[in-house]
Image (cartoon, rainbow, N blue to C red; front, top):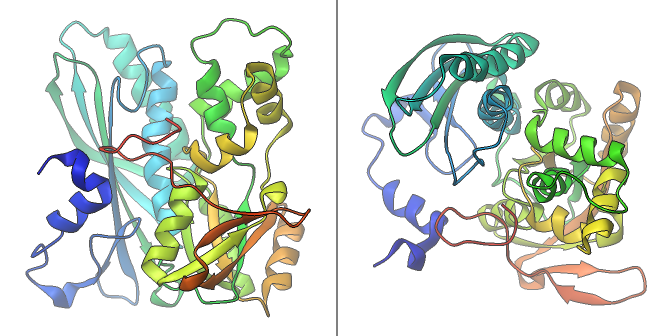
Length: 340
């Protein structure tokens, strides 16, 4: 059986069998954004790891500091999606022997700047020779109170689907990275889109603030595209959904890039990935409290749909009454979708 036959989700399902040998210490193992482990003192340990490969997850032209920033941001976003606080990080680097030392220190500088912003210690790691290109693997350890632990599997029928920030912005930046100039695109939109791709911002502070509203039921971070990441919530919760495509928030720069390149900004949002915004389902009776919390704290929140029974499938519902099934897509490491 080839990897392409099972895909990333299928491979994870296969590998996750028989991995827990002392279950008393494990709240959540493989299958969510981070593991949740019992460590005493009324909190759960969160652990998340991601590996980035040159040519697979980033292009050679990425600035070293941006590579360091993104490698850490990916993991911090996973901790945010679990409702947690990030504490420590370990960094493993695979480095070509001819790599310039200044570039290596710049990778770390990008990580250190983001780590300082969120109070995260870099406490260890490893370096190895990697003749075929750079490899960056980051493990982040965090913590969360059991009552604040957020999962993908806890959505309910009738929940309101909400996202933070704007979607599709990283995909817009990726579309520009190998271009020095795009006719008809303002310079400020070019710069903003590339910045959004290089320097995504994890929503650690935002999720801790939004928890206070008591409205959130299920969460995923948008790393692989809205379609795929919503699909993970729905699959784990055994439910369906309808999305309101006109309401999916896209920034002015994202729309401008898509227009200049003859692309669809909605496709960027649905399938692009690497925005690292948060995708929430919220109790419909408390969603107004959630929106007020976001407004008071300066956290942009947008309602983009509703959770339905599984039989409803997943559909796009347009304001003019049109309905269509949401096509699958997004990033899969072994089944290539649209996006990255």
